Length: 268
Image (tube, rainbow, N blue to C red; front, side):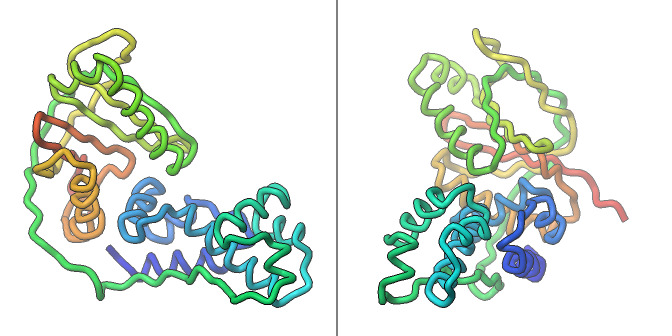
């Protein structure tokens, strides 16, 4: 991963805490898609990009409360909150005190610091994978949508929780279960399904093409996330392929998960 680009993005965020920050602009600074940027950020920091921006805004607001006479309502508006109430709620959740308490009481300063990315703490390991040409695959799925990446993660967890309570989960799991993530303009989609058709499912076509396939050697979520972190922070910058940043595919078998990354040769 190019940490210089990530640090340039962090500087842009810091310079624009009081402005509307578009993820499209952040992705352009890093040179990737919005979806891939948000995945990389989570892998590197264990927090979402929106959480980082929220914490930096609240941290800056804390300092202003302690050092200026700015009104609480003006700070709420300045740091992009819809109301003084929503600002106060977020402030108390982060710092354990109300904005008015912070302003009037003699308490210690609290800060959520600016992140700096570096290679110092990274270790590299071998990554084994296959390159295969895959024919079009017709699947039958159920899915969810979301407007933000954070909502997508929540909705995916809820989707699996809901279907695990039904016989459908057992059926598709026995046949080989697919998970598909798609990022379109202003919308995130996720589907889970199989090659067999069941009630209440809709058809989805996995596009033919060349894929890099990584074996996780586990179905545990922590192992999948660990493998994805290596793919997006190490393999991606080392390969001679371009990837489809808006499409990700997982295949779950009895004891394993395979991650499919759609690729193409880099253009000179």
